[in-house]
Length: 545
Image (cartoon, rainbow, N blue to C red; front, side, top):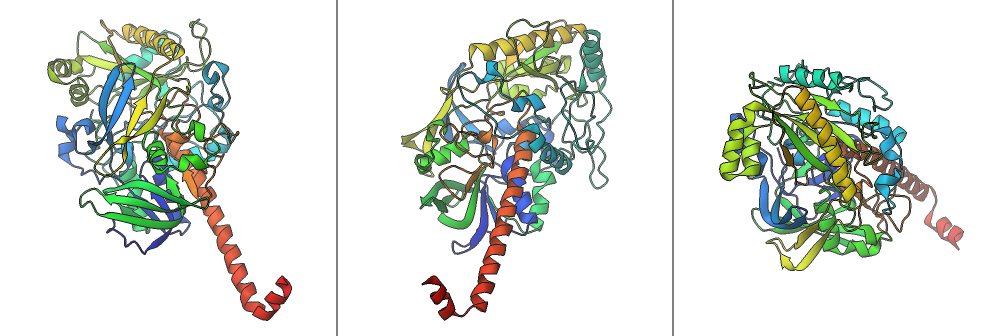
């Protein structure tokens, strides 16, 4: 479905770098506005079929998780060499479909989170709400409005109703209610009632897997095929290695084809960067364009990724003997704090049911530990605790020009540590999750910290103060007239929910803005040509003099 490699003489209205939530949603707006758009994707399409159900179908074990450009990562858990996902649709292909809006209060500054970071949203929930609604429609999100105690204003209902609760989900729901909590249905981008598709089979291979039957509404399934049919030039296996800048503008991008090594350069009127909160600052720093930005000091800084951990409830008998999908319940009673939690005060985050998968457990733990834990998965259910983390200057990415990959990109180095408050917020949520699981009948509740960057945000943040933010309110890169950044790096704070829907909604908003700019410029150009045809050249010179 991807286009042939374009000729370097071709020009485009917009070049989009990356096919994740940000890049795809911007492209949706621009393609439907009639623009000529090329999308450059480092990876390739992920094949779908029965093989996706196997243990080897876990994303971490597949060819789309690559070490060809290794990351040097230093965290609380030690120093490691990590890879990254590259595929059409980005990490949406392997995510679990959770599609939550940030809460209205997330856009307001909470001193216990902001600290001395100056992290400030230049937009509010009311600005984002129509774009949240559109993103939910495009992704066919299933949910039930009115149950979440922290839910903000909605301009319309969810597109689909969720599937009936699995037996273990009913147990979790009942346990939470007996403890005085208000569980609600987790909104999911999963096809339950679409007439033109097979629909969800309620298998347990969702988080960490590509959907074998295309029932998970990831971007490669739900959005990109239509865009390609409408004219999007999607070019896969293409690594962008440099943004070429001159006179306050990006003039072209330099690329390397992953399979052939061919080097090419493409030009456009404008450029949209959506590589992710790690890859986007990587490219900006490797290209040296941060020097043009008055907020250069924050580029690569304030990396956030939530302080996440899974409390696994182990039961005497299999809690889900039908082995059906049970990622269905969320709990936000503690999101903005709770009378029963004295420390830390203020915002905490959310709790979500999680479906443990044998393949994912084996992939994460590896070796004998992974094999033993994988065998015991059928006796478990999980609650994922998502604690909002503080934006901190010392958490950052940087480039090492002395170490380069085979494409010529300098190595990315990642430094991240959780603050004492981050850890306290996570532990407070974990204690509540353990209470719920024990109430549901679990006899043991071990904890598994999550040390991935699947929720990474920040690093090229938007803001009000040009000296303290790299992007303006419309995500234009300050100092350059034709570059926008729309992946999770734009977020000044992480909130306490999965970032995917916020990235998608914001990209739709920015894409609408770019389409309006283009339409205005086209009208001015047509007007100028009409004036030029109507007024003789001699008269124009006379007026000019």
